[in-house]
Image (cartoon, rainbow, N blue to C red; front, side, top):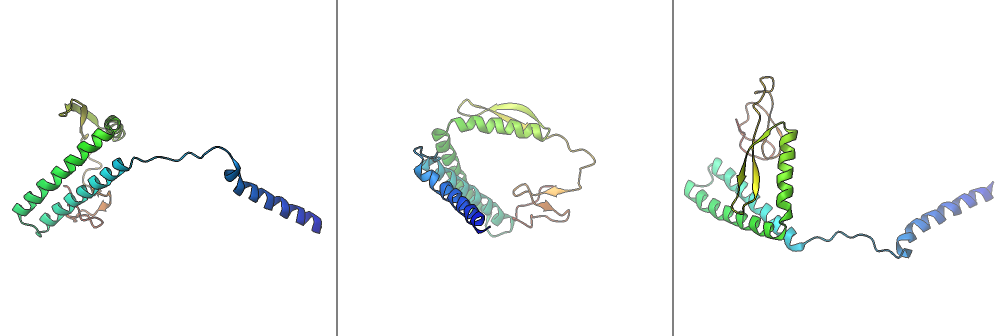
Length: 168
């Protein structure tokens, strides 16, 4: 009985040791994803600028900023965001086609249709989407935040989760 227990313990310990040591003894290198540091940095900067634009809009809506300050800061931030987007497009031009395909797929899943195709300054076609008309059964029942997707109560003017102004 004790020999059986010792044999099973040795068998389990040997299996665990083999599992741990196998990557060290194998001659093939594991696949390591390589990130483009410049692209990652640009995307994080772009995201930061977009968050700053949302914060700026919120500050204007609650009365913290005057209209002229808002216009001045908004123009700067939007210009920065456009610059980052252009740099990202230069580094990863194939992602532009992926974005277009993603938008078309989202439109299909939402049961909307591309109304027309707009051509941007670079000659790339991008679908312009129009939402399908809401059905009477869903009109006015449940609203969601356009920023974070949080459910909005009918009487709320701002999202309780992120502070974005509720759309009517």
